[in-house]
Image (tube, rainbow over all chains, first blue to last red; front, top):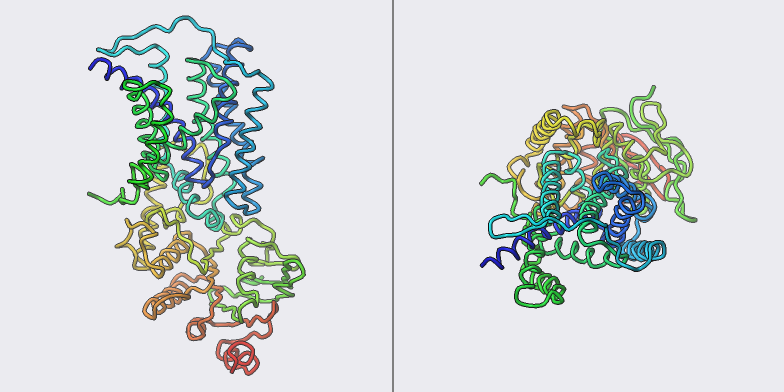
Length: 294
Length: 253
Protein backbone atom coordinates (compact mmCIF):
# COMPACT_ATOMS: atom_id res chain seq x y z
CA UNK A 1 0.00 0.00 0.00
CA UNK A 2 2.82 2.34 0.97
CA UNK A 3 4.51 1.61 -2.38
CA UNK A 4 1.34 2.44 -4.30
CA UNK A 5 0.95 5.72 -2.42
CA UNK A 6 4.57 6.57 -3.13
CA UNK A 7 4.14 5.76 -6.82
CA UNK A 8 0.96 7.83 -6.94
CA UNK A 9 2.79 10.75 -5.32
CA UNK A 10 5.62 10.44 -7.84
CA UNK A 11 2.99 10.29 -10.58
CA UNK A 12 1.33 13.47 -9.30
CA UNK A 13 4.66 15.31 -9.27
CA UNK A 14 5.35 14.28 -12.85
CA UNK A 15 1.69 15.01 -13.59
CA UNK A 16 2.20 18.65 -12.61
CA UNK A 17 5.09 18.87 -15.08
CA UNK A 18 3.27 16.98 -17.83
CA UNK A 19 0.15 19.10 -17.34
CA UNK A 20 2.17 22.29 -17.89
CA UNK A 21 3.66 20.79 -21.04
CA UNK A 22 0.21 19.73 -22.23
CA UNK A 23 -1.18 23.22 -21.59
CA UNK A 24 1.71 24.76 -23.56
CA UNK A 25 1.20 22.39 -26.48
CA UNK A 26 -2.60 22.52 -26.28
CA UNK A 27 -2.74 26.33 -26.36
CA UNK A 28 -1.04 26.36 -29.77
CA UNK A 29 -3.15 23.48 -31.07
CA UNK A 30 -6.44 25.00 -29.86
CA UNK A 31 -5.78 28.58 -30.95
CA UNK A 32 -3.56 28.25 -34.01
CA UNK A 33 -4.43 24.70 -35.12
CA UNK A 34 -0.72 24.05 -35.50
CA UNK A 35 0.82 20.72 -34.44
CA UNK A 36 3.65 22.54 -32.70
CA UNK A 37 6.60 20.12 -33.12
CA UNK A 38 9.05 22.98 -32.49
CA UNK A 39 7.68 22.92 -28.92
CA UNK A 40 10.17 20.12 -28.18
CA UNK A 41 13.06 22.30 -29.39
CA UNK A 42 11.86 25.31 -27.40
CA UNK A 43 11.65 23.06 -24.31
CA UNK A 44 15.29 22.00 -24.72
CA UNK A 45 16.40 25.59 -25.45
CA UNK A 46 14.73 26.73 -22.21
CA UNK A 47 16.38 23.93 -20.23
CA UNK A 48 19.79 24.91 -21.62
CA UNK A 49 19.12 28.59 -20.91
CA UNK A 50 18.40 27.70 -17.26
CA UNK A 51 21.49 25.49 -17.09
CA UNK A 52 23.69 28.22 -18.60
CA UNK A 53 22.38 30.90 -16.24
CA UNK A 54 23.02 28.71 -13.20
CA UNK A 55 26.24 26.91 -14.14
CA UNK A 56 28.04 29.38 -16.44
CA UNK A 57 26.69 32.76 -15.35
CA UNK A 58 26.56 31.67 -11.73
CA UNK A 59 23.05 32.86 -10.91
CA UNK A 60 20.99 31.40 -8.07
CA UNK A 61 18.29 29.07 -9.49
CA UNK A 62 15.47 31.52 -8.60
CA UNK A 63 16.65 34.48 -10.74
CA UNK A 64 17.86 31.99 -13.35
CA UNK A 65 14.31 30.63 -13.47
CA UNK A 66 12.89 34.13 -14.04
CA UNK A 67 15.55 34.79 -16.69
CA UNK A 68 14.59 31.53 -18.41
CA UNK A 69 10.93 32.55 -18.51
CA UNK A 70 11.85 35.85 -20.19
CA UNK A 71 14.11 34.00 -22.65
CA UNK A 72 11.29 31.54 -23.36
CA UNK A 73 8.80 34.33 -24.00
CA UNK A 74 11.22 35.88 -26.48
CA UNK A 75 11.93 32.60 -28.30
CA UNK A 76 8.21 31.89 -28.50
CA UNK A 77 7.59 35.30 -30.05
CA UNK A 78 10.49 34.70 -32.45
CA UNK A 79 9.01 31.33 -33.40
CA UNK A 80 5.74 33.04 -34.34
CA UNK A 81 7.13 35.94 -36.34
CA UNK A 82 9.97 33.98 -37.96
CA UNK A 83 8.33 30.61 -38.53
CA UNK A 84 4.54 30.44 -38.29
CA UNK A 85 3.46 33.95 -39.32
CA UNK A 86 4.89 33.80 -42.87
CA UNK A 87 2.99 30.52 -43.40
CA UNK A 88 -0.20 31.97 -41.93
CA UNK A 89 0.08 35.04 -44.18
CA UNK A 90 0.37 32.83 -47.26
CA UNK A 91 -2.46 30.58 -46.10
CA UNK A 92 -0.14 27.55 -46.27
CA UNK A 93 -1.52 24.03 -45.76
CA UNK A 94 -1.24 22.59 -42.25
CA UNK A 95 1.07 19.85 -43.55
CA UNK A 96 3.57 22.49 -44.74
CA UNK A 97 3.48 24.18 -41.33
CA UNK A 98 4.00 20.79 -39.64
CA UNK A 99 7.10 20.07 -41.74
CA UNK A 100 8.48 23.55 -41.10
CA UNK A 101 7.88 23.08 -37.37
CA UNK A 102 9.66 19.72 -37.49
CA UNK A 103 12.54 21.38 -39.33
CA UNK A 104 12.77 24.08 -36.65
CA UNK A 105 12.80 21.39 -33.96
CA UNK A 106 15.65 19.47 -35.64
CA UNK A 107 17.60 22.69 -36.24
CA UNK A 108 17.27 23.73 -32.59
CA UNK A 109 18.26 20.26 -31.34
CA UNK A 110 21.35 20.17 -33.57
CA UNK A 111 22.37 23.72 -32.78
CA UNK A 112 22.19 23.01 -29.04
CA UNK A 113 24.18 19.76 -29.47
CA UNK A 114 26.78 21.67 -31.46
CA UNK A 115 27.06 24.45 -28.91
CA UNK A 116 26.87 22.40 -25.70
CA UNK A 117 27.80 18.85 -26.72
CA UNK A 118 25.71 15.71 -26.50
CA UNK A 119 26.46 14.90 -22.87
CA UNK A 120 23.96 15.14 -20.05
CA UNK A 121 24.25 18.54 -18.36
CA UNK A 122 23.32 18.69 -14.71
CA UNK A 123 22.99 21.51 -12.23
CA UNK A 124 25.34 21.12 -9.28
CA UNK A 125 23.47 21.09 -6.03
CA UNK A 126 23.69 19.31 -2.74
CA UNK A 127 21.74 16.17 -2.00
CA UNK A 128 18.05 17.08 -2.09
CA UNK A 129 16.47 16.92 1.36
CA UNK A 130 13.77 14.29 1.72
CA UNK A 131 10.46 15.41 3.20
CA UNK A 132 8.06 12.93 4.82
CA UNK A 133 4.40 13.55 4.14
CA UNK A 134 2.62 10.74 5.97
CA UNK A 135 3.73 7.48 4.35
CA UNK A 136 5.08 9.29 1.29
CA UNK A 137 8.58 10.69 0.84
CA UNK A 138 9.24 13.49 -1.61
CA UNK A 139 12.44 15.39 -2.22
CA UNK A 140 12.54 19.16 -1.88
CA UNK A 141 12.77 19.50 -5.63
CA UNK A 142 9.79 17.20 -6.19
CA UNK A 143 7.77 19.32 -3.78
CA UNK A 144 8.88 22.44 -5.62
CA UNK A 145 7.83 20.84 -8.92
CA UNK A 146 4.44 19.91 -7.47
CA UNK A 147 3.70 23.35 -6.00
CA UNK A 148 5.06 25.41 -8.91
CA UNK A 149 3.41 23.09 -11.47
CA UNK A 150 -0.10 23.08 -10.06
CA UNK A 151 0.25 26.73 -8.98
CA UNK A 152 1.09 27.79 -12.54
CA UNK A 153 -1.72 25.71 -13.99
CA UNK A 154 -4.19 27.13 -11.46
CA UNK A 155 -3.11 30.70 -12.16
CA UNK A 156 -3.45 30.28 -15.91
CA UNK A 157 -6.82 28.55 -15.42
CA UNK A 158 -8.12 31.64 -13.58
CA UNK A 159 -6.90 33.83 -16.44
CA UNK A 160 -8.45 31.51 -19.05
CA UNK A 161 -11.82 31.70 -17.27
CA UNK A 162 -11.88 35.43 -16.67
CA UNK A 163 -10.10 37.16 -19.53
CA UNK A 164 -11.80 37.95 -22.80
CA UNK A 165 -8.45 37.50 -24.52
CA UNK A 166 -8.74 33.74 -24.06
CA UNK A 167 -12.27 33.72 -25.44
CA UNK A 168 -10.87 35.44 -28.52
CA UNK A 169 -8.05 32.86 -28.65
CA UNK A 170 -10.53 29.98 -28.54
CA UNK A 171 -12.56 31.67 -31.27
CA UNK A 172 -9.39 32.07 -33.35
CA UNK A 173 -8.92 28.30 -33.31
CA UNK A 174 -12.33 27.82 -34.90
CA UNK A 175 -12.30 30.53 -37.57
CA UNK A 176 -9.01 32.48 -37.77
CA UNK A 177 -10.09 34.50 -40.79
CA UNK A 178 -13.05 35.89 -38.83
CA UNK A 179 -10.84 37.40 -36.14
CA UNK A 180 -9.64 40.43 -38.13
CA UNK A 181 -13.15 40.88 -39.51
CA UNK A 182 -14.27 41.44 -35.91
CA UNK A 183 -11.55 44.05 -35.46
CA UNK A 184 -9.34 41.80 -33.30
CA UNK A 185 -5.56 41.95 -33.77
CA UNK A 186 -4.90 38.46 -35.07
CA UNK A 187 -1.10 38.74 -35.18
CA UNK A 188 -0.86 40.01 -31.61
CA UNK A 189 -3.11 37.18 -30.46
CA UNK A 190 -1.00 34.59 -32.29
CA UNK A 191 2.21 35.99 -30.79
CA UNK A 192 0.63 35.94 -27.33
CA UNK A 193 -0.22 32.24 -27.75
CA UNK A 194 3.37 31.34 -28.70
CA UNK A 195 4.81 33.40 -25.83
CA UNK A 196 2.47 31.77 -23.29
CA UNK A 197 3.05 28.31 -24.73
CA UNK A 198 6.84 28.59 -24.57
CA UNK A 199 6.73 29.99 -21.04
CA UNK A 200 4.59 26.98 -20.09
CA UNK A 201 7.35 24.74 -21.52
CA UNK A 202 10.11 26.71 -19.79
CA UNK A 203 8.70 26.13 -16.29
CA UNK A 204 8.95 22.30 -16.41
CA UNK A 205 12.15 22.53 -18.49
CA UNK A 206 13.86 24.50 -15.69
CA UNK A 207 12.46 22.30 -12.93
CA UNK A 208 13.45 19.08 -14.70
CA UNK A 209 16.91 20.48 -15.47
CA UNK A 210 17.33 21.38 -11.80
CA UNK A 211 16.30 17.86 -10.77
CA UNK A 212 17.86 15.45 -13.26
CA UNK A 213 19.66 17.67 -15.80
CA UNK A 214 19.11 17.80 -19.52
CA UNK A 215 20.63 16.77 -22.84
CA UNK A 216 19.95 18.04 -26.37
CA UNK A 217 17.84 15.02 -27.33
CA UNK A 218 15.11 15.02 -24.64
CA UNK A 219 12.88 17.33 -26.68
CA UNK A 220 11.15 14.64 -28.74
CA UNK A 221 10.28 12.62 -25.65
CA UNK A 222 8.63 15.61 -23.93
CA UNK A 223 6.95 16.66 -27.16
CA UNK A 224 5.33 13.22 -27.42
CA UNK A 225 4.24 13.40 -23.78
CA UNK A 226 2.65 16.82 -24.41
CA UNK A 227 0.88 15.71 -27.57
CA UNK A 228 -0.40 12.45 -26.05
CA UNK A 229 -1.61 14.24 -22.92
CA UNK A 230 -3.55 16.73 -25.05
CA UNK A 231 -5.12 14.01 -27.21
CA UNK A 232 -5.95 11.79 -24.24
CA UNK A 233 -7.39 14.60 -22.12
CA UNK A 234 -9.35 16.29 -24.89
CA UNK A 235 -7.78 18.52 -27.53
CA UNK A 236 -10.27 21.37 -27.11
CA UNK A 237 -10.38 21.76 -23.36
CA UNK A 238 -7.96 23.30 -20.85
CA UNK A 239 -9.21 20.96 -18.14
CA UNK A 240 -8.70 18.08 -20.55
CA UNK A 241 -5.04 18.96 -21.11
CA UNK A 242 -4.41 19.01 -17.35
CA UNK A 243 -6.34 15.77 -16.76
CA UNK A 244 -4.50 14.14 -19.68
CA UNK A 245 -1.09 15.16 -18.35
CA UNK A 246 -1.81 13.95 -14.82
CA UNK A 247 -3.43 10.70 -16.00
CA UNK A 248 -0.48 9.92 -18.24
CA UNK A 249 2.08 10.60 -15.49
CA UNK A 250 0.20 8.54 -12.90
CA UNK A 251 -0.16 5.61 -15.30
CA UNK A 252 3.52 5.78 -16.21
CA UNK A 253 4.41 5.82 -12.52
CA UNK A 254 2.16 2.86 -11.71
CA UNK A 255 3.59 0.93 -14.65
CA UNK A 256 6.95 1.02 -12.90
CA UNK A 257 5.35 -0.96 -10.08
CA UNK A 258 4.63 -3.98 -12.27
CA UNK A 259 7.02 -3.54 -15.17
CA UNK A 260 10.36 -1.91 -15.80
CA UNK A 261 10.53 1.85 -16.42
CA UNK A 262 11.72 0.90 -19.91
CA UNK A 263 8.05 0.18 -20.74
CA UNK A 264 6.85 3.73 -20.10
CA UNK A 265 6.54 4.51 -23.80
CA UNK A 266 4.32 1.46 -24.16
CA UNK A 267 2.05 2.92 -21.48
CA UNK A 268 2.07 6.31 -23.20
CA UNK A 269 1.11 5.03 -26.62
CA UNK A 270 -1.13 2.27 -25.25
CA UNK A 271 -3.15 4.94 -23.49
CA UNK A 272 -3.26 7.04 -26.64
CA UNK A 273 -4.47 4.20 -28.86
CA UNK A 274 -7.05 3.10 -26.28
CA UNK A 275 -8.42 6.62 -26.05
CA UNK A 276 -8.51 7.12 -29.80
CA UNK A 277 -10.44 3.87 -30.24
CA UNK A 278 -12.92 4.20 -27.37
CA UNK A 279 -13.21 7.92 -26.68
CA UNK A 280 -12.09 9.93 -29.66
CA UNK A 281 -12.75 13.35 -28.12
CA UNK A 282 -10.67 12.63 -25.03
CA UNK A 283 -11.50 12.35 -21.35
CA UNK A 284 -12.94 15.87 -21.09
CA UNK A 285 -15.32 16.62 -23.93
CA UNK A 286 -16.44 20.25 -24.11
CA UNK A 287 -19.37 19.26 -26.33
CA UNK A 288 -21.35 18.75 -23.16
CA UNK A 289 -22.22 22.45 -23.00
CA UNK A 290 -20.34 23.12 -19.78
CA UNK A 291 -21.95 26.54 -19.41
CA UNK A 292 -25.49 25.25 -19.37
CA UNK A 293 -26.98 25.41 -15.86
CA UNK A 294 -27.37 21.95 -14.33
CA UNK B 1 -18.55 65.02 -47.80
CA UNK B 2 -20.22 61.84 -49.01
CA UNK B 3 -21.78 59.90 -46.17
CA UNK B 4 -21.21 56.30 -47.08
CA UNK B 5 -18.76 54.22 -49.04
CA UNK B 6 -17.26 55.49 -52.27
CA UNK B 7 -15.44 53.25 -54.72
CA UNK B 8 -13.21 55.22 -57.09
CA UNK B 9 -11.97 53.33 -60.15
CA UNK B 10 -11.24 50.20 -58.12
CA UNK B 11 -9.38 47.50 -60.05
CA UNK B 12 -8.16 44.11 -58.92
CA UNK B 13 -6.10 41.70 -60.96
CA UNK B 14 -5.25 38.03 -60.37
CA UNK B 15 -2.39 37.28 -62.79
CA UNK B 16 -3.66 38.29 -66.21
CA UNK B 17 -7.28 38.16 -65.14
CA UNK B 18 -8.96 41.42 -64.14
CA UNK B 19 -11.55 40.51 -61.52
CA UNK B 20 -12.49 44.19 -61.13
CA UNK B 21 -11.94 46.95 -63.69
CA UNK B 22 -12.44 50.63 -62.86
CA UNK B 23 -15.37 50.03 -60.56
CA UNK B 24 -16.99 53.29 -59.57
CA UNK B 25 -19.88 53.09 -57.18
CA UNK B 26 -21.40 54.76 -54.17
CA UNK B 27 -23.03 53.02 -51.21
CA UNK B 28 -25.15 55.70 -49.49
CA UNK B 29 -25.64 55.87 -45.74
CA UNK B 30 -28.69 54.18 -44.20
CA UNK B 31 -29.69 52.60 -47.50
CA UNK B 32 -29.42 49.13 -49.00
CA UNK B 33 -27.25 48.84 -52.07
CA UNK B 34 -27.13 45.56 -53.97
CA UNK B 35 -24.37 44.32 -56.23
CA UNK B 36 -25.74 41.78 -58.66
CA UNK B 37 -24.37 39.97 -61.66
CA UNK B 38 -23.54 36.53 -63.04
CA UNK B 39 -21.04 34.21 -61.37
CA UNK B 40 -17.47 35.46 -61.82
CA UNK B 41 -18.59 39.05 -62.28
CA UNK B 42 -16.42 40.18 -59.34
CA UNK B 43 -19.09 40.75 -56.67
CA UNK B 44 -17.40 38.83 -53.84
CA UNK B 45 -13.99 40.22 -54.85
CA UNK B 46 -15.48 43.68 -54.45
CA UNK B 47 -16.60 42.88 -50.88
CA UNK B 48 -13.12 41.49 -50.16
CA UNK B 49 -11.57 44.74 -51.39
CA UNK B 50 -13.94 46.89 -49.31
CA UNK B 51 -13.35 44.72 -46.22
CA UNK B 52 -9.56 44.85 -46.61
CA UNK B 53 -9.00 41.14 -47.25
CA UNK B 54 -7.72 42.10 -50.72
CA UNK B 55 -5.87 45.26 -51.64
CA UNK B 56 -6.94 46.92 -54.89
CA UNK B 57 -4.31 47.14 -57.64
CA UNK B 58 -5.68 50.54 -58.60
CA UNK B 59 -8.30 52.95 -57.29
CA UNK B 60 -9.45 53.75 -53.78
CA UNK B 61 -12.21 52.90 -51.36
CA UNK B 62 -13.31 55.82 -49.21
CA UNK B 63 -15.41 55.85 -46.08
CA UNK B 64 -16.96 59.24 -45.46
CA UNK B 65 -14.24 60.84 -47.57
CA UNK B 66 -11.31 59.03 -45.91
CA UNK B 67 -9.33 56.49 -47.93
CA UNK B 68 -9.56 53.07 -46.29
CA UNK B 69 -8.24 50.85 -49.08
CA UNK B 70 -4.88 49.39 -48.10
CA UNK B 71 -5.74 49.25 -44.41
CA UNK B 72 -5.60 45.77 -42.81
CA UNK B 73 -8.95 44.02 -42.27
CA UNK B 74 -8.98 44.53 -38.49
CA UNK B 75 -8.42 48.28 -38.93
CA UNK B 76 -11.30 48.46 -41.41
CA UNK B 77 -13.49 46.43 -39.04
CA UNK B 78 -12.69 48.92 -36.28
CA UNK B 79 -14.01 51.71 -38.49
CA UNK B 80 -17.41 50.02 -38.27
CA UNK B 81 -17.48 47.89 -41.40
CA UNK B 82 -18.81 44.41 -40.61
CA UNK B 83 -18.75 41.42 -42.91
CA UNK B 84 -20.98 38.38 -43.28
CA UNK B 85 -19.67 35.58 -45.47
CA UNK B 86 -21.58 33.45 -47.93
CA UNK B 87 -20.49 30.27 -46.10
CA UNK B 88 -21.56 31.82 -42.75
CA UNK B 89 -18.34 31.25 -40.72
CA UNK B 90 -19.27 30.98 -37.09
CA UNK B 91 -16.99 29.88 -34.26
CA UNK B 92 -18.30 26.32 -34.29
CA UNK B 93 -16.63 25.20 -31.06
CA UNK B 94 -18.08 28.12 -29.09
CA UNK B 95 -21.61 28.55 -27.83
CA UNK B 96 -24.04 30.89 -29.56
CA UNK B 97 -23.64 33.36 -26.69
CA UNK B 98 -19.84 33.25 -26.88
CA UNK B 99 -20.01 33.80 -30.64
CA UNK B 100 -21.85 37.07 -30.12
CA UNK B 101 -19.76 37.99 -27.05
CA UNK B 102 -16.48 37.86 -28.97
CA UNK B 103 -17.91 40.52 -31.30
CA UNK B 104 -19.21 42.62 -28.40
CA UNK B 105 -15.83 43.08 -26.69
CA UNK B 106 -14.75 46.72 -26.67
CA UNK B 107 -12.17 47.19 -29.41
CA UNK B 108 -9.78 49.66 -27.81
CA UNK B 109 -8.40 47.34 -25.13
CA UNK B 110 -8.59 43.91 -26.71
CA UNK B 111 -5.37 42.58 -25.25
CA UNK B 112 -4.37 45.57 -23.23
CA UNK B 113 -2.11 44.19 -20.51
CA UNK B 114 -2.96 46.76 -17.80
CA UNK B 115 -6.57 45.56 -17.80
CA UNK B 116 -5.32 42.08 -16.88
CA UNK B 117 -4.33 43.35 -13.47
CA UNK B 118 -7.73 44.90 -12.77
CA UNK B 119 -9.90 41.82 -12.33
CA UNK B 120 -12.92 43.94 -11.43
CA UNK B 121 -12.96 45.96 -14.61
CA UNK B 122 -12.32 42.85 -16.71
CA UNK B 123 -15.35 41.09 -15.17
CA UNK B 124 -17.44 44.21 -15.76
CA UNK B 125 -16.39 44.27 -19.43
CA UNK B 126 -17.22 40.58 -19.79
CA UNK B 127 -20.62 41.08 -18.13
CA UNK B 128 -21.34 44.05 -20.36
CA UNK B 129 -20.34 42.06 -23.47
CA UNK B 130 -22.60 39.19 -22.35
CA UNK B 131 -25.57 41.53 -21.89
CA UNK B 132 -24.95 43.14 -25.25
CA UNK B 133 -24.58 39.73 -26.93
CA UNK B 134 -27.80 38.50 -25.33
CA UNK B 135 -29.65 41.60 -26.46
CA UNK B 136 -28.76 40.99 -30.09
CA UNK B 137 -29.42 37.27 -29.87
CA UNK B 138 -32.92 38.14 -28.68
CA UNK B 139 -33.21 40.60 -31.56
CA UNK B 140 -32.55 37.86 -34.13
CA UNK B 141 -34.54 35.25 -32.18
CA UNK B 142 -31.64 33.05 -31.10
CA UNK B 143 -31.54 33.78 -27.35
CA UNK B 144 -33.19 30.43 -26.54
CA UNK B 145 -30.26 28.64 -28.16
CA UNK B 146 -27.57 30.67 -26.41
CA UNK B 147 -25.94 27.68 -24.68
CA UNK B 148 -25.91 25.52 -27.79
CA UNK B 149 -22.63 25.05 -29.59
CA UNK B 150 -22.70 26.86 -32.93
CA UNK B 151 -21.89 23.62 -34.80
CA UNK B 152 -25.14 22.10 -33.53
CA UNK B 153 -27.24 24.76 -35.28
CA UNK B 154 -28.82 24.55 -38.70
CA UNK B 155 -27.30 26.59 -41.54
CA UNK B 156 -30.09 29.16 -41.26
CA UNK B 157 -29.63 29.50 -37.50
CA UNK B 158 -25.90 30.00 -38.04
CA UNK B 159 -26.73 32.84 -40.44
CA UNK B 160 -28.86 34.43 -37.71
CA UNK B 161 -25.97 34.10 -35.24
CA UNK B 162 -23.62 35.75 -37.70
CA UNK B 163 -26.11 38.61 -38.09
CA UNK B 164 -26.35 38.95 -34.30
CA UNK B 165 -22.56 39.07 -34.23
CA UNK B 166 -22.54 41.96 -36.73
CA UNK B 167 -25.10 43.86 -34.68
CA UNK B 168 -23.23 43.16 -31.42
CA UNK B 169 -20.06 44.52 -32.99
CA UNK B 170 -21.99 47.74 -33.59
CA UNK B 171 -21.01 47.82 -37.24
CA UNK B 172 -22.32 50.88 -39.09
CA UNK B 173 -21.89 49.33 -42.51
CA UNK B 174 -22.77 45.71 -43.24
CA UNK B 175 -21.20 43.84 -46.15
CA UNK B 176 -23.45 40.85 -46.74
CA UNK B 177 -22.40 38.14 -49.18
CA UNK B 178 -25.51 36.25 -50.31
CA UNK B 179 -27.30 36.51 -46.96
CA UNK B 180 -30.18 34.30 -48.07
CA UNK B 181 -28.30 31.63 -50.06
CA UNK B 182 -29.21 28.10 -48.99
CA UNK B 183 -32.06 29.16 -46.69
CA UNK B 184 -35.62 27.94 -46.48
CA UNK B 185 -38.44 30.25 -47.57
CA UNK B 186 -39.37 31.10 -43.95
CA UNK B 187 -35.76 31.78 -43.02
CA UNK B 188 -35.33 34.02 -46.10
CA UNK B 189 -38.31 36.09 -44.94
CA UNK B 190 -36.82 36.36 -41.47
CA UNK B 191 -33.38 37.44 -42.72
CA UNK B 192 -34.91 39.97 -45.14
CA UNK B 193 -36.98 41.41 -42.31
CA UNK B 194 -33.94 41.65 -40.00
CA UNK B 195 -31.92 43.49 -42.67
CA UNK B 196 -34.79 45.90 -43.30
CA UNK B 197 -35.21 46.51 -39.57
CA UNK B 198 -31.45 47.09 -39.20
CA UNK B 199 -31.63 49.89 -41.76
CA UNK B 200 -34.85 51.46 -40.49
CA UNK B 201 -34.31 51.09 -36.72
CA UNK B 202 -30.52 51.34 -36.44
CA UNK B 203 -29.80 53.44 -39.51
CA UNK B 204 -27.24 50.95 -40.78
CA UNK B 205 -25.79 51.04 -44.27
CA UNK B 206 -25.93 47.76 -46.19
CA UNK B 207 -24.00 46.60 -49.24
CA UNK B 208 -25.10 43.17 -50.30
CA UNK B 209 -24.33 40.64 -52.97
CA UNK B 210 -27.32 38.49 -53.82
CA UNK B 211 -28.51 36.12 -56.54
CA UNK B 212 -32.11 35.86 -55.34
CA UNK B 213 -33.81 38.57 -57.39
CA UNK B 214 -36.98 38.69 -55.32
CA UNK B 215 -34.83 39.38 -52.25
CA UNK B 216 -32.98 42.09 -54.17
CA UNK B 217 -36.28 43.58 -55.30
CA UNK B 218 -37.59 43.55 -51.70
CA UNK B 219 -34.46 45.00 -50.11
CA UNK B 220 -32.41 47.14 -52.45
CA UNK B 221 -32.78 50.89 -52.80
CA UNK B 222 -30.07 50.98 -55.43
CA UNK B 223 -28.52 48.30 -57.60
CA UNK B 224 -25.16 48.05 -59.34
CA UNK B 225 -25.03 45.40 -62.04
CA UNK B 226 -21.55 43.94 -62.42
CA UNK B 227 -20.47 42.21 -65.60
CA UNK B 228 -16.94 40.90 -66.24
CA UNK B 229 -15.47 42.99 -63.45
CA UNK B 230 -16.99 46.35 -64.21
CA UNK B 231 -20.26 48.04 -63.42
CA UNK B 232 -22.36 47.72 -66.55
CA UNK B 233 -25.48 49.34 -65.19
CA UNK B 234 -26.64 51.17 -62.05
CA UNK B 235 -29.96 52.50 -60.92
CA UNK B 236 -33.02 52.11 -58.75
CA UNK B 237 -34.10 48.52 -58.18
CA UNK B 238 -37.11 48.50 -60.51
CA UNK B 239 -35.15 50.29 -63.20
CA UNK B 240 -32.18 47.87 -63.19
CA UNK B 241 -34.22 44.69 -62.82
CA UNK B 242 -36.45 45.81 -65.69
CA UNK B 243 -33.55 46.72 -67.95
CA UNK B 244 -33.40 44.70 -71.15
CA UNK B 245 -29.57 44.34 -71.20
CA UNK B 246 -29.48 43.19 -67.57
CA UNK B 247 -32.21 40.66 -68.23
CA UNK B 248 -30.37 39.37 -71.28
CA UNK B 249 -26.93 39.07 -69.66
CA UNK B 250 -27.99 37.97 -66.20
CA UNK B 251 -31.30 36.18 -66.46
CA UNK B 252 -31.08 35.00 -70.06
CA UNK B 253 -34.49 36.54 -70.80
